Image 1 (cartoon, rainbow over the protein chains, first blue to last red):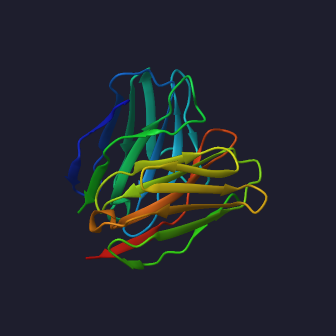
Image 2: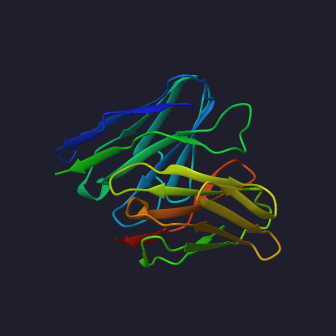
Image 3: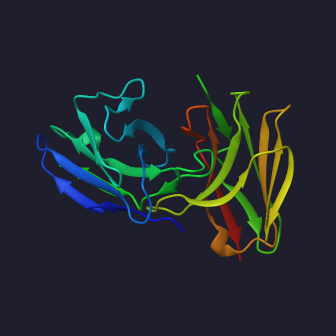
Length: 117
Length: 110
């Protein structure tokens, strides 16, 4: 099946620094990727939709200037958490739908655990 | 506001029993429905997808969809301790976004 990778799998950073998370589709092209955030014992919440070659669209309540998304190629989307604070500590997961069947399931990356000290 | 509702559980069943997980959704325009299993600290993995009314079976898993009632369920037969996880119901909206329920924690007792 299709594979989506994320890097890094875990990151610990100091408050006020920026952290970049990469999401790659390894064996298929993804014009769209989705970024989710999951706090402990809660479900996945969609943060934004990453669109190759155009601006990302953000869900209500998600600060676009804090969570910068760049979809530079058909296989790579990056999420940068700027000026991270402890409340940004969470599990960040990306996903990508198959181009030919967008109504089919999305392929999820393994997630990135962010801890902000 | 599009919503997907699940009982948070935990749902505890003995090994070998049938586990029944339920989900309701608010968006009548939804076309695709999914059940994911998520182990602690891991990403969700797809268990079942269903697109039309009725039942869909895959091994020990059966998904049931009733669009009139806006209801989707997952049955797990012959439950195993390894099935213990959180099960997420997800509904895809018209812009291909997945809306997740809060998840039901399943515990299968040996």
